[in-house]
Length: 513
Image 1: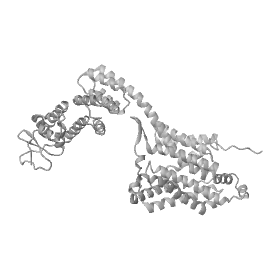
Image 2: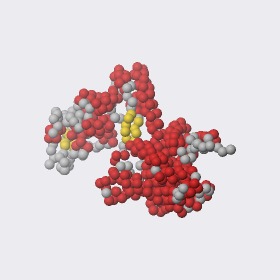
Image 3: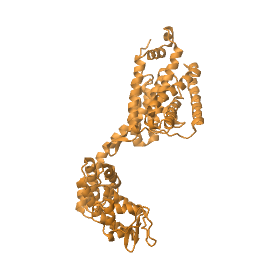
Image 4: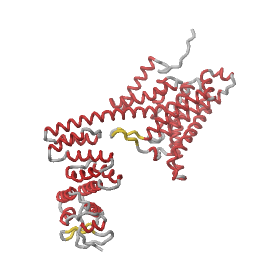
């Protein structure tokens, strides 16, 4: 049944305790030209009338009709009268209604509702909402929301007709460190006519810019360390196959790809057979990616590379051919398009330190993971029997063989270890980028740069070179762009190799005259 109710009755039935919205004001919001409807909406909002919310929601739901100069609100599922008109909601009215509802939600008892309302009003606060915003500020008890609401009130004052109020608002906003606040001040300063208010806005913009500069510097440093950790992960496997074994493995990038696709397969298996445990798939994907890449690497070593030790040019050509075979195999199995690898819930989002500085959890995880892999690899080479045999074979193969070491087996195990670490790097890369047949091509050159610059066979050099090249690359990209940054890094590598042919951390030894 259609209930012809004045809005106050509707609100009483809805459980809102407030005086009823005047019928003429409700009718003005529902019917008329857009300017008059917006003005009526702002008038009701300025009065802080809690009964406005249910009426606006009914208007959004299409349950309001206009008949005889009155706004009629229908029950859900009721049939409207034939002679009643349905209010038209254009884009402007929809935006105004959404903004008004968000303003009313600032008075909600639920913190999440208030926080969502603040996010909605962030770019839509003006002087017409000041009474409601100030009322919400007076009632707010949460320290974080109160600070954000205070900034919102000051931002709304910037659109006031009172120049003194605009000047005061600019001085209040000078303590902010939010890029959106700075953008708002820049926008308002362009149309400001009062000299004192304009000067206050200029001062606030400069103060906020100084604070944002520190956030930008920290973001640049973190981006460089993040890239450096990725390069370090990629180069660690190469430090064994190239640095210790002397094999120029052009298929190293494809071993990364194998690890990334192994992660994708594990993800799909969890999604199909254990969807409730999806957040834990990465713990299975890590050993799976290591084993998949290690097996492929061992097969490469036993079938091709074992015959080419000491012949670097032939090794380069053979592994380049293997890389083409691996890429085509992946295209045949999974298709040429990239596949989607999702982050677990605990790796989604980021840690917001500043308004313009957010550290993504997946990048932080890769930083920690690279450190763990580095420590594990150093301990394995320095403290285990396998590490002892690998070092013995790489330093003096004939003497190790005379001591009873199975050099062929050690070669296979060392190459499989380096390949497995490349697989771990592929698993990590799947959490921050696309996974496709060409994944490894983006990192193989940079990985060789890291190993050569750090010093062949030197783990410490690999660490310094990886992190250093990552940070330097981001600094140069911010200055000259990505292409020129890459050229500059290559030129720097050439200059360093000319002065230090064995890298920054060359192996120490004695010359025999």
